[in-house]
Structure formats: structure tokens, C-alpha cells
Length: 405
Image 1 (tube, rainbow, N blue to C red):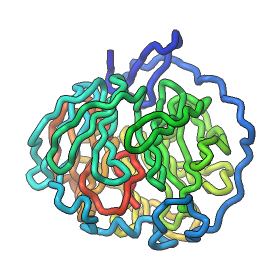
Image 2: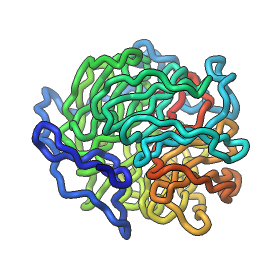
Image 3: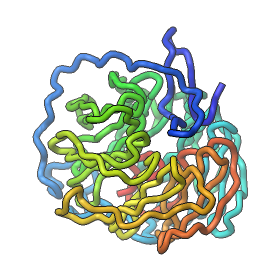
């Protein structure tokens, strides 16, 4: 029933598609045409006024204070592991969407040391807010599989409908399920995963997000209709909505700059990143970075962002320049020898290796962050997707494959 991470399923009599697209120029796709659910009625979709950056007094109640108002990733320095994770073995967890397994790689040897059977179509491996659990998102299986990073053992699955991707509010109270086929954001208790609120999104392919410096809002991408959403974290309401100003868009990963002033949205069909002012939520600007731009990852020193270009087998190195146009510029591009399909991943705890899944090629790439040369190419299951490198530095997790602050 699955094809390279693309799902066609029937829900409530309507034909829908999960936001796990394999659609690429020059790549075969089994995805059929679909239309988004109608936009829900909203009491107020005006963009809310911006809050001053770096002012913890305005932060979402219960959110840990920002360590450095000029660097949201100040807690993510090399090997700066908190007590909760410092004794976990270093591993790379790779969900194989077509094999219904998780491949576990020892980064010291570049070898798969275990293959774990999980639910139907695992999409992402997501660190919990408190860093103690890794949640495997079994999208078609409608379950989450908890994995103990201390022992590598799985626990009883938890019933969660349509868990394509998973995030956590900065105060640690709620998980936010990206229910792509259901056209919803589902706020759930972060510990029990019991649903608290179902928020219809009115867009097709809701999938990735990131949070503002004060935690009071987050920006969400909808890949199949090119929509961006701005969501009030505390009210659990959509407060802004816009379509990307271009035909044939497919927005993917979302990431905020270290200084908290610029947002980047990777776009697989526009072949670059959209540069957005999240506070004002005005029309973003496109910067071309490479074919099939997909995943966004911050370096351990907060100086660079790695952009995986799935369509051309490369990684663009983006150099942050606070105050400059677009918040930075392209520094260089690294090409994987022989090509590949770099998708989602993360950075090693010491910052020396960028790990990326090879979505179409049943492999994982280990890339040296000093010069971009390929360290290893590791065979895994079919359709590897949102791999997690664990443990990583940081005080808490905002979800996805590891957004730590």
C-alpha cells in the first residue's frame, strides 16, 4: 500500500494523501491529484504584533529562559550533553518507511548494529521534550512506538491517529501532531499523548514547523498546496495564513535563524529556501540553493545551516550573517560522489558529522562538516526518512528529528 513514502488512503470516504512526498523533477511518483480540505472558519486571522526578541519576560509561560537572546542554539554547543542524556550510547536511528523498521547505526563504526520492527510506515524518529524517549511516528499504523535511548528497547505502542510528524511546545506541556492526511494539527498531552485539541488547518500536506524565540507562535508548512501557517502556541489557533508567491511550490522543513529574526522554509519544487519575517508574516523571498531543497540543520557553532538538496544529491552550506539581506548567504555546496537523495537527518553531538537519509537509495550518508567530503555510505532499509542522531546537546527538544534549545 506504500510507495517510497507516499501514501494514498481513504479516510471518511475522501481520498487523501500524507505529507511524505517523494515527488521530484525526474523522479517517478505514484502520487495522484488531491485537493486540500476547505479552510476552517477563524475568529481572527490577523497577524499578531511582534514581541521583542530576547525578552524572557514575554516568553510562553513555563518555557525555559533563552540562554542568549542573540543565539537560540546557545545550548547546542559541541558535546554539551545534559545529565539526562550524557550516558546514552551514541546512535543514529533511521526509520525505513517502506520496510516498517528502524535501522540503528553505530556512528563510531558506520555499521548497522540492530534493525527494529515497528509500525506501518514510520516517517520520523522524534526526541521527546524531556529528552528521555524517542518516538517513532508510524504514520499508516496510527501509532507511536516509544524507544528507550538508554537501552535501545521499544515499549508498548501508543494509539495516535495519522502521526506523520511530531513537535513539542516549548513549555513541554503539549505535543503537536502533524496529522497530514487528516488536515489537522492535534495538540496532545506531551506525556500521555491524549488529545487536547484538534485544529483543522485547511491546507494540504501539513508537515514541518519551528517555534519563535519567545515560544508564543510557530510557523508551519503545508507541502501539497504551498501554504504557510502561523499558529498561536498558547491559544492553539491559526493567526496567520498565506500562499507562497509562486506556482508549483512544495515547502518542507522550517528553521529559524540563531538570532531569531529570520525564518527559512525549504521548498522542494522551487529548489531553494524561502526567507520569511515570522513576526510580520509578510511575503517571503526565494533564494535558490539546489534542486529539491528539503532539510535544514544548524551547525554546532550556530554559524551555518546545512540544506539538503534531495533532487541533486548535494548539501548547500548557508552562512548566517546577522543584519544582512536574507540573514546570510550561500557559502559553498557539497556534492555527494555518485549522487544520492539526501533528505532528513541531524548533526553529531560533536558537530563533526552531518547525517542524512538517502530517501530513494536505501542508504544513509555521513558527511564531514569540515569540508563536506563523504565519510560513509551505509545501506539501510527501504525509504529511509526522518533519521535522528542521538543523543545531542540541548536542554529540551521541540521535536522533528531534533530541534534542541
